Amino acid sequence: MNSNNSNNSEIANAIKIIESVAPDGYGRMLIPSETDSELYQQIEFALQSDSRADFLLNQHGVNNLFKFVERMATHCLRETEFLPCSHAAEALELLLWQPEYDEHMILVALALTHDAYERLPEPQPEFDGKRLPRFSKAWDHFFSDLDHHKSISSVHFRIGEERDGPRYICYW
Image 1: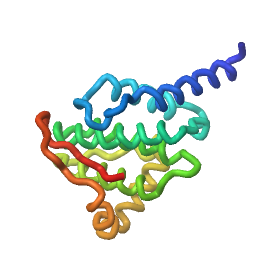
Image 2: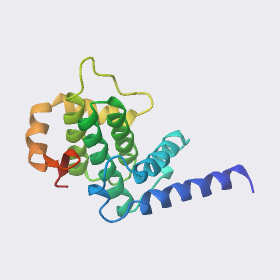
Image 3: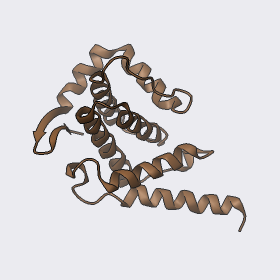
Image 4: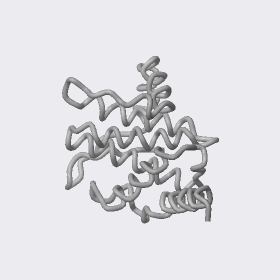
């Protein structure tokens, strides 16, 4: 087997995991969870790939990544740490490589990530623009019209209190 076929099977396996690893109710599970770790490993693999465009996901996979963004923003909200916010950005990078992504859902995910990011203590770390070029472009665009985007997206998520702490609740 040549390395190209091996790489293709690794990509196919990563796609399969992203599309199937999250159980029903993933969005409401305790944070962090083993599912978060498994999804993040596949996101990392995809971002290290030579061609991110090879990671074409079905709707279930896309939904899992949006739930991952929501969960990482919640983790950032609870712990005031940049790392979960960075994980959300990495998932968004992969979502932005999908050929027909839902712009409204991307906007909500950006607003969620922005809200969590803005709650971090100063100085806030920067996202890696070279590693996350599509996310960086979307992030810059989001900031260029922040008032407009915040007003649109503010009705699409709220912060609720649950027994394990505050949690973002999205209306995708």
